[in-house]
Length: 545
Image (cartoon, rainbow, N blue to C red):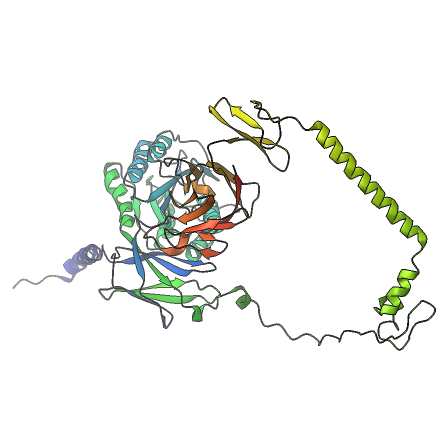
């Protein structure tokens, strides 16, 4: 029997190990893994959301934080989840990218967009030593996104990914979006020795501390192996995919990023008894027994919990009580009285008050009489002048004149109505066939307001221009708002608001004056009421017709 030499074994061993590793990777390709974990903490909801790739909808999973179990988690497909998945694609558009790959890289970006999840928004950016966003917000207008990508040009410029990526993550953290946000970086590598600015280690530290998966695509120039290793190390931190760009495998590379389309969101309520602000480990046990461990940020149960117990202050001094039985004057006061002994003017004795009344000089009485006469005269003059100058109520097509209630006609709209004036005296046209005008004003920024007239019903929503009679918000104005979030109706002389989010998790349900609304139940509203959508509140003003 022929034996295998040691030299042959040494040659074959790396091949066997490599084959074994590849087999493991293939077998574990669909193994569930945690991609991100977020904690929501507001007045009513304290929820942890765990984004699990290759999770199971309706899974009989259990979740515990530390040693404390929670109620059974709810599950949602990321394609139907109320918080859209967001993808930021960052392209190094410098001339260091090989010329024969530049067009194919743009094609790759287009394919990633076209492979989008049902509920995915994109933002496109190029970078050099600074980030250059080509879209002002995350959007699901895929046609516009493709056009933007196809118009990208490559420039002669320096590139410093460490500074740029550090700033991008910092901006995302400040924004505080509680949905899944991932970053795809396309470049030829990372220099670990920047002149000034952020080092590679600093960028790695901020990636570890935040919930943003980093996917990397490296362009091989033939002499940048170390730079590519630095680049791919950013993906290793979050166990994300990384690939070397290949002109002949654009479609396969684009397909790598569709794995996140299979994310399932597990939501669990954080037990109040552990809400002390201390981060803990969470363990999600899936129905098949798979255990997933993640870090969970724990909120405080209430604001007072974050304040340490303060030391007791000194006992308050007892209130001083006047003991005088006789009148007090500057020349004659009771020095034994706690009040008058310090200052006789503080004495509240009835005798003192009467003495003060008697001592009022006659000039004060005369001054008061003169002021009263002047006030009466001014009032009479105002009433007479107003009566003289009041115009007759007539039809008027000039919307800048007239008085409150003057009949007017808007030629552009072809509608008859009346004039209405705001507190500054500015006139506006109030059509005769409407019930009123609804104005929503941002509680924290009174310069932002949204206004719409109402006949019977209006809808409030984000990117809801396809609905008739809509107060329409943009993505960056309230990312927690749904397309058809709530409605306001006019019925029997009253205005009602109704939450129209059905079969969704409770995170973004509408609140009125801090009270969460039930789905599909109308609530009476009036001017001055506060409605809350997500984490933003608005003051309602109703100008009745």
